Amino acid sequence: MNHTSAIETWRTLLDPAKSWVLFGHDTCVILMRPDGDLADQATTLLREYGPVHPGTPAGDFDTIELRDAPGWVVTGHHPDILTYVAPDELDDHDHLVVGLHGRTKRDQDGHDLTVIHVEDKRA
Image (cartoon, rainbow, N blue to C red; front, side):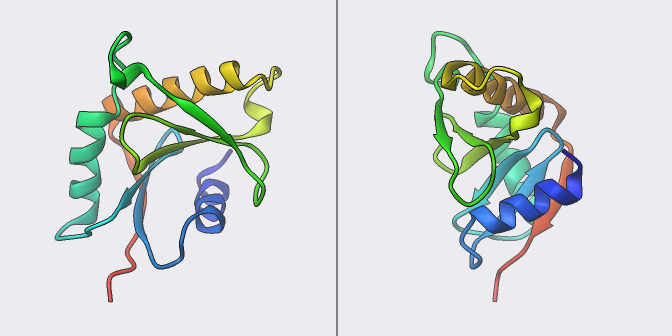
């Protein structure tokens, strides 16, 4: 998935009034209390809650099959950090396989911390 497609997918999925930041491996951080530099705020959250630590809540995930876009959102231990998995990323669409893949993408974003897009909806 290219970055333009990922941005459009998140715009379709998220509340249009919310501010959010997209990272390089399709992890989105929704900013419930946007303040200051949004990229910095999201990076701080993802640095803490993105990396996976098996056997802890940071290793937990759930998958949500989407209705408004093809694919899935994979959740983790922070409710405002979500990772998109497109159907063409995997041959096996079993929820466990999708969830593990999304968790891996979140982990990559939690280490890389490469901001791709900032959606600033502050008034």
